[in-house]
Length: 100
Length: 487
Image 1 (tube, rainbow over the protein chains, first blue to last red):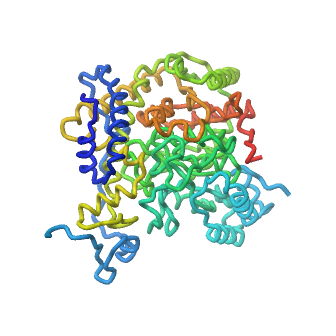
Image 2: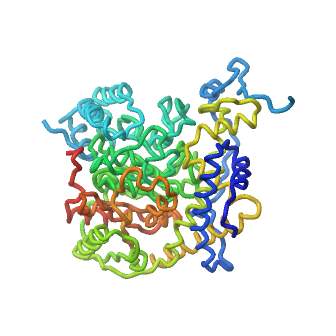
Image 3: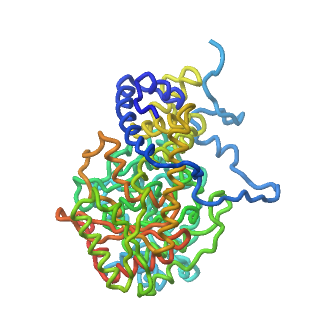
């Protein structure tokens, strides 16, 4: 485990997580996340050789059902809470993805 | 005339026609208006909707009087979706959001005759142990307004403690029902993972989250569970298991034959002396009710916080990806291109702790770190669960303090995330193992702050837990103590 997070590493993670950070936040998080990771280093003491990881507390099944039509959220209700939408065309609107 | 204050008593009074649902509802709304300026337990109050519902119950009393929560005012943590009512999870990113659907628990409460009065403040997206991470101001502890109410369901616990409502729902990912219940001197219950549908709960860490009730006594918690529990096809993690009569089990008083395990090594360190003393006295009371105390060991539980914060943040980083400024919520400023829009929306919309956890979770899931952190934490989770399994071979219930300290001062821990995380040291185990746990009032510290006793049992064995908690309650009067604001 590498348990020190440098500010440029914090910036890389913030980008992966799609978070804009101020320079102040970046430096603060570098310090605080380093402290949390150093605390988590104690897990290295635990012998987990051959121990299966738990991703979930219950033994889950994947039940099947008939493929039948059921009512779902009406389109106008789904669009109702959007920050930007073309309600007549039934579309969410986002800023441009490609181009200059 | 004095109105009844517990959910069970209100139900009986409304059903018999001794009081009207409208009188009960108005009393709750008046109390909220009087004291919530100081507490800030509520994020929003639906006066009009609540009074309309109460009037409907009064009009149809003959027809509805058999319902288990008829006329009972209920508050919901603000991370539980309510159709066309504000649901923000105390985050700026959901300011003004009104969901198009109800959570399953909301439908169940309404079908049971409950009157939903409003939504309660919490740590943003349920991430915190003090309710200080709300974007809408801190909630104050009714026992001492300079202290935190615990978190993340701090608004729900404070609302019940101050007797604004008899019943509130919270959500518990690492202690977020039990710890605030303990610090506010009320009863908080985290059911077995899967027992209560999570459909419509804004997800934080899906393998740990569970909705549960907070009330002033065990009887009310059991009553609420009869309504909340049960399989829901809309939640794939909901357990398809028979639901026992939680409320009926509580009336059986004796603890003869019950074995209660005490993990001595785990509580030998870092517990405030007043808290430890109150818990020791509670164990003596339980022994006095013929329960047998047994020393047990949960050797991996001391690593619970480390494993929990890696797993919970990893799941959170994935769950909170949905808040991207496209389908709901508040879009950030300076949104030039799509990518900038995402970063601006999330950078401005999320508060400091949520960003900290998303980053930690993103890091532990990222290439090169996954095995060392995330997978390792999941393996330790297995060992923690096995410790519980082994303990439950020997005992029926495990007893612990809920919180190692009484309520701390506002601002005392906000600059030190690790210190804040350690508030959950005795509660995360139940979430990691998926077992049910309850916190009940068991004393006051020398600073007059409540102490909670935590009891845990086997998966799906809530009935035993409630029976033990009810027997303790009957032998003591800590649950009847009221804070200055709730008197």
